[in-house]
Length: 167
Image 1 (cartoon, one colour):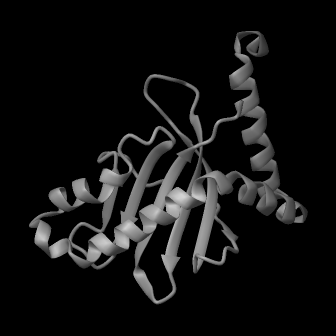
Image 2: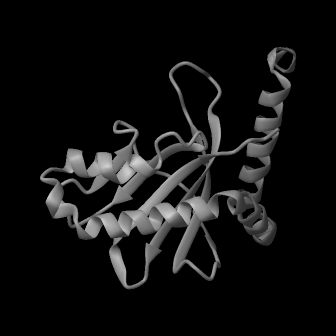
């Protein structure tokens, strides 16, 4: 009965997410999970790298913005209009407002299973499958979280959630 009410897109999303969950749960499947997440991240890495550099550059001049609201607007301006971006967060443990979010009210997911990827241009690159839950739909929007923290500066972590197109 449930299958009759699901669209093809919803079925594909469900199968993809089930496969990711199984890959995460199965220790012997670690290599295939890492490979699948690595492949899923490829289309987003250039944009993510550009945003990561932008965040670190903007943080150097943060004091000139006057307040976190203005800084947050400037910081996330690079992501506005990108239809593949579901959400983003910048974690700054030493700042008055330690988490900046885009959209502003989007909470940082609390329980994620991160997988470390080895990429030459990143010190610590982590990825995790994720679903954006919306009030207007029972179905979540499948996404991939990409996170980076530099070794020399553990103070700022950049996380962006990209929409996964499963068609």
